[in-house]
Length: 219
Image 1: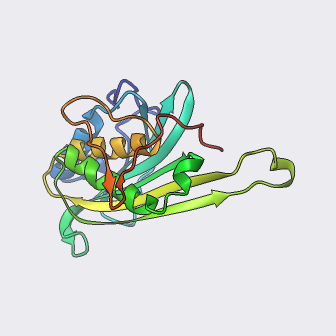
Image 2 (image 1 turned 120 degrees about the vertical axis):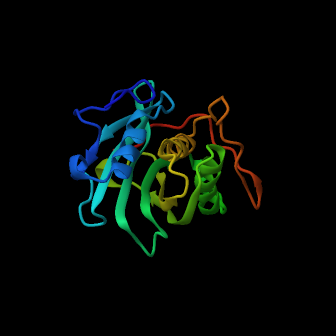
């Protein structure tokens, strides 16, 4: 796989996929666009097995946000293609993503956090000029308290953002870059500089900043 954000994906090939050699040219072009996209240097992409029952053609990547050897967030992106289209998609392509990160305690108690997490995604898509339709998803918060032999671990809260949308512009690299920004925002990294740096995310309660860094995710 071509180097992405300075980090080549491991395992060879252009990522996890189903039957790309015999796939329609539109799907092969989309996979090529994803493979050649360049993301922030903190993001490491790796190929992943693609689901085979959701669409005739699929392609998958996993990603992690790593700073100073620490993993701060991770996730998965799947590109689905059905040449006949699917009514629920309102199109013949669909992007399906999962983003996961551990939150700092001061963020975990924010009552607007679910709405803000969803806004991170929509703002990232807008910042990168990625046209989309039919967005849907969930934002889940999971709190963990440790006991017994694990009692010395501090309590933790994890945010998980699952989202899907229909690309409406054919610029698949923009959609990958937007998802990369969502990963970094969830990880607590400051916005990247440059023409596609995402703006501050606002909620009904005003600007909600993320901490500049957080402790690495527990495994």
